[in-house]
Length: 288
Image (cartoon, rainbow, N blue to C red; front, side):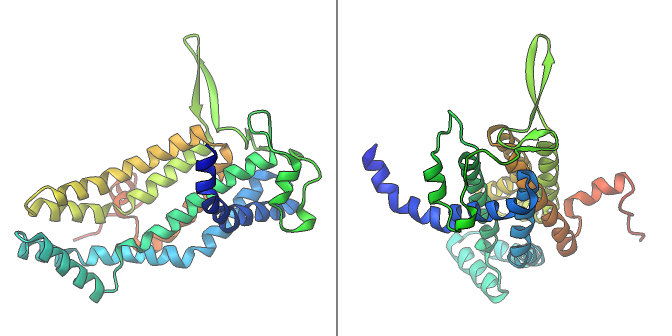
């Protein structure tokens, strides 16, 4: 065990100084003004999302660009259907000529989840208990601004609206003699927003499926299926996270994803949500 701890010690140190300590100190700073952990997290989430607006905007434009490249990709796959290596080279050339980087959209997601884990650790520090014992001395070792050092642990208000931010957002409901934990408002709202965000990129997934259907072999079919499955998997993962992590994480996700949905609308439109909104009259069908 000591060997493993020693092995990962440099990684842990880098993680703490680059991610956890800044997040923890920003949270304590915002808390001085809001005096409520829920509002502090919302303001932090909004600030982070606005700071990433430029990066995420580029990611959304990349999605739109990939959609415009779909006809060219279809031609390349038809032209090089018997030579996968040549196809990969041709695709790379097409992407380079159009300034398209498939991996460029990963950074915002990585940052979002890095902050998520840092917030979870922050909650452990701010509200220690028997299951998560942390000494006040250890807590203050992570505080880099003297005025933010804690005089006592667990002194901040931890109730936001109806939920305890240190516990999962579940509502116990009795059914047939059993108590079932149903997802709370924050889990449901976060999941709906996550689904909307994924569904709005559905036109891109549809085009990928069309290309895959014309291409021999299973590799493209598997890729298209995986992309389509992520539309449902990501919201499901959101629910699982909501059940396993403190409700503060769902509170953090909601403003982050809401702004992403708004920004995505102005870049790519309603996308795969268009047929749904047409049915309820929110989007009018185009007249021929």
